Image (tube, rainbow, N blue to C red; front, top):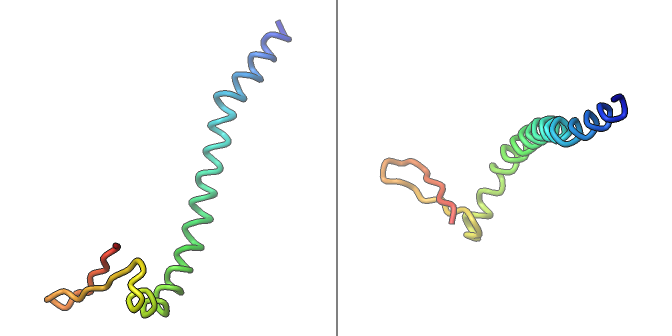
Length: 75
């Protein structure tokens, strides 16, 4: 009984809870690690490099709307 319950418990925990426990901590950690870093990088990088992408036309094309709004079009 003990060997079976321990074996089943270990296998069940590794398959069901193990995957859930591995995914749940990894996802929030990735979100927490990705959100603060890119946000700082985006804010710090968006200001100076705007002239480069718009001038080179690599990925970002900034078109000024008739109402004066700056529309960022991702090509």
